[in-house]
Image (cartoon, rainbow over all chains, first blue to last red; front, side):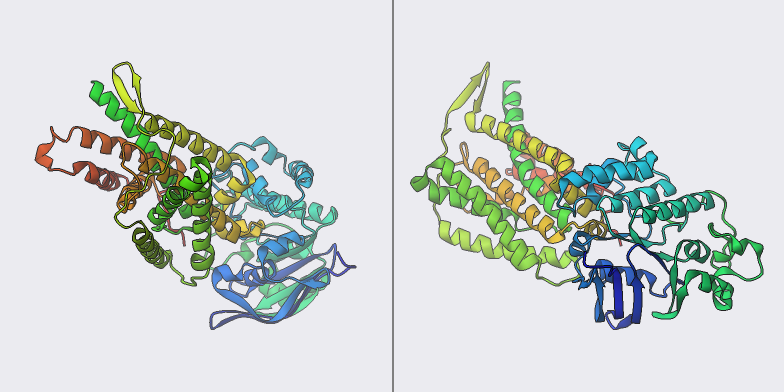
Length: 276
Length: 296
């Protein structure tokens, strides 16, 4: 934990085989901050998180140049090291261990931490953030609703006592009320001292939470700046927030404009993705 | 009736030993998704060590050495070959394990030659009379030891950090890695555990009424494959059930061979595979297996 240095991504390039996914990425997440990364599908948002958490090799990708460092020293690209250093990712699509119970999922989240005593404290914290996880402790995770699974996925990551939480589209496929609930929880986790790197397609929600934001386009940083400035900029409003609809001013929630074109408005309880 | 009971108890006892082998097989599959065909040679290696070391060390130390040795061989195969083989498909890795198995088995059978090696166990050929039925002591011990080991193993799988890491990896390796689970260690421990279980199984496959360890012991070990597959390759409960089904089927078919003369001799050896095929026709993932084994 050297000084105030948080997460620093410098000149990062990532390839999947011959395919370039990211180029010349510079992203900084100061300690204690919430930073958002916005962009369309395929812009490289998830790849960026994989490069930080060290899971590129699961997708046959690799960092071809540049560095990722945390707390002033480099992360070596192994997920176990990242977790031990306090950088923990909540994967896209929740990815709870469906065949294991809620309590076992939380236990799995603490596997990367040596200090056994801290696991109890972490569990208390998770249970106070998400009381439903205490109620459902002995239920199979696969039987939880989408929103509950997202809570479990975040809770599981918190079991490792992260100082930097990487969140990959935490509100994807959730009902607006649940998305708002998750957003409020992210704010609370940050207030408790954890820095957050938030990847989102829901730009309104992300810009409402973050102090600083980056916009990725085809693997490069197209725009960056304070979240409030980006939220006010014409380009971001047009591309990611939708122009001229009063709803876009809502800081949190999924608007029809955020949906891919051609998709009908979703009913309140939609499962856009299965995580079995 | 007496014959039937004797056959049944013998079948359950041998089945429990098959379950031990199948369990190791399943653990490796769960942790790494590799179908491990080196299992028969791991077993032979464990048995061979016990046979060679017991005159000098005494039975119990030799057994410990055999278990440790087979675990080490398993771990070495994982560390030197499986981990380094940069092939994308688990099918190719399975074929790599066949190659390793042939190498190991060839070397071991060369060492064994035409000998039948005794393992120096303390039970020898003593039998137990329970009312009208007569059972070899070795069978009772095998049943007890296998039951205890399997119980311990299932408890560890359910309740220890190692077990949670193993199950998390089996379900979703990438997400388990995100939790800080070191996949290499999980895989290494799976191979070591499988080796150790195989060595124990080797002991009980080679003691009375079997004459001893010889080159045909690997054939006996092969029966654990149908046990693992018919139970469900990714299910520990399935390994247990599969082992028992194979053991009992084999014992009954061999025992009543004279009544089944129209099937020809050797039906006992073929029966486990027939049962496997019959079960797979109706339940393609095995009795307890997860239906969707390959997730993309």
